[in-house]
Each structure stands twice: as structure tokens, then as C-alpha cells.
Length: 304
Image (cartoon, rainbow, N blue to C red):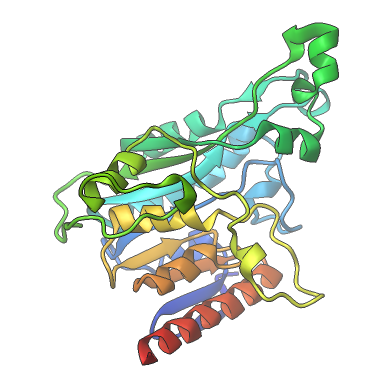
């Protein structure tokens, strides 16, 4: 299984296939920026395919499998350019891991990219509401009754991270210029000085408190009853900030785990070109709908 289906248009190329195999056909040093959310080891089940990283039996197997992709990402990324990985540390379970605690998934990803030649460039912690997480997961450590019973088994909520790695070398096409707008919860943003300085001071914060967790493509899309919901769609504000900070208009943006097309949707809407790869057919089909919708919206905007 290399490519089962592909849709190629002026603004995007979408491939239904195995991201490791498809990425092997991408030219060396051809990608300006990659941003994606990989499978979180075995936390979620996305498909029944043996090619799906989410179906690996152990963390060791997951990272061995993931390493083949990281190797290709290093090859296809331009020198001096970046790859951003959206991730979180993972809760462990008594039945799967033998203990209740947290696994350093974020750190394992960083170490894997370092192993394949990348430079650890930056990271930001993205705040998530622990009450919402408690209601959704019923995690023992977040329950107030556990605090009252024995707080030694209590813990804080688990945030998201956007970890950014750089390929060594001199960037042949600098991402230059000032920031011209703020992306995020605009109710919390007030301009006090020069706009670009104000925006940068927010973006440079090591913790992003102003990401709207419900601003996802899944929430925005006009969906039909038989459309499958994506388990963990990446917030659109996170994607747009990454693109705003680390890419130029008309750059080629890659997502090897395209899902329903969130990274591509924002790439097209902000004047970038997009390459997306997705293993699961239902996600691929929904992604193509969303990417085509982005193209239509951009064309309408340009007409007026």
C-alpha cells in the first residue's frame, strides 16, 4: 500500500496511503514547514490497519515505527526550516502499564527527532481546562473525591505541547517580516505598542492560555450524518500561529497525519500550499471535502 487514492489541485495534494511510503517520493529539501499531531502511541484507536502507528503494541514498537517517518521528514525538510509536533504526555493505566501515572511521550518524541539529526528549537505549553478533562476522561487523579480520600494519587491536568524541531543548515528562504495580526482569543488581546511587538510578546510566552479549544475544523465543518468524527482534531489557532510564525505565503506545508485536513485547511486559507497524507479512508475523504471548501472560500474572498 503506497497510494490508494490521490487528489491534486493547485493549492493542495492529498494522498490516501501510508505516510512513510508516500513521503519517500517527496523530493529532498522540498518542504518549507511541517505541522501535525501524530497518533498518541496507543491512547486512541484510529483504524484496524497494521500500518497505523496507533495500533503498536508497545511504546518501543511505536517509536521504532515512527522513526522511519522522522528520517524522511529530515530528508524532505529544507535546511534551517522547522517541523512542529503537537503532542501531550500520556496517562498510564493499571491494566496496560501496571501503574497509574504519566508517561513522558513529549520527551520521547524530542529524543527521537534529536536521534535523527534535528535541533530542539522551541516548545510551548498549551493550557487545557482540567475540569473538562475530568468530565471527559473520569481520570482518577483529577477527581475531587480522590483528593479527599488520598491526595497522593491526585495530579494536575495534562496540557498539550507544540514542540518545534529545526533541520540544521542555513535557511535559503528566510521567514522575514513583522506580525500583522493576532490569532487566538481576541477578547484577551489588547494592542498597547506596535502591533507586531504586542503579538510577538503573546506568542513568545512559554504557555499559551489564549487558545480556544473548541475552534477545530470538526466544529466548523458542515458535516453529514455519516461523516466520521476525528478523535483529536488539532485546534485551528495552534496551526495558524505555527504557520504565521514559521512559514511564508506560498510555502509548501506538510502534514503526514492529515486526519480531516485541519493543517491543510488553514494552510490554504493563509495562502500556503499543502501536502497531506492520511491512512484512514473516511478521514481522507472528509479531508478532501474540507480542503476543497477552503479553496472555494479563498476564491470567493479574492473575488470581492
